[in-house]
Image (cartoon, rainbow, N blue to C red; front, side, top):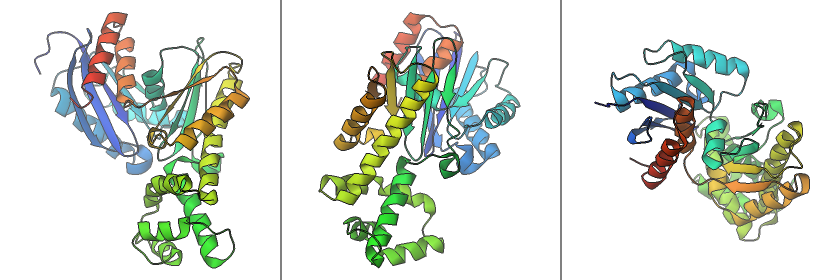
Length: 326
């Protein structure tokens, strides 16, 4: 690569893709690359680290970065972070300063530099984190129903199918989701969709693709679909409010960074209801919707870990926002 100044490499691994970027310590973006998902919940630990390793080679070849920061979805428990860090540490480009953490930290930094803050990611799944200036954090296990979580594209899709099935067989309320969900999968009935899922002709993960359909159906006036949207908004607000309460930040004017594909859809009902319900639990909190890719936050965190000054961090941010695909 021929870099003459020290550089950092940052990764943001989500449920659908992995972004990576190399940035010099003075804030110059050298290269970026995108690969498949590196979520260990999706592909497993070894395959996840292989994705990161491959992107590292594409970015910098054999050059050694002064700092590597890896933020990956699915690292929800301390044991998972430790296991992943150990696997990354075996790669030749890793060092004692290598950072491994959940991708929520990257989203949070993309949305704010304030030290008292919270973030909620609502993409394929849902998770939240709160941070305080003294270093304290609050977060959730984010393991789905077994840890009390609901939402994201997967949860929304499951709820849509649940209501559609109960409409079709007579147990539930009438909803336009029934014909819409069947048509989405190219089938003639919800019973056929259920059978295809049961027999694995349709992957369960495909339910996440129903999220835009639910928002569209709600906008058309369907009360059942609107109820799903409101339920999602409530979950986002309660997760943010809970981490703020656990950190004694409910009465402070803190940002609540909101990101992920469901949030980035920009659905007006969803965002308005999130703001309304968040105001009810944390009156001084202000929602901050992040449309930029979390790799921006990952890069800024990597630079800060490497000791870059404020001018360099600001320059990197401007460059990444101006040329997100470089």
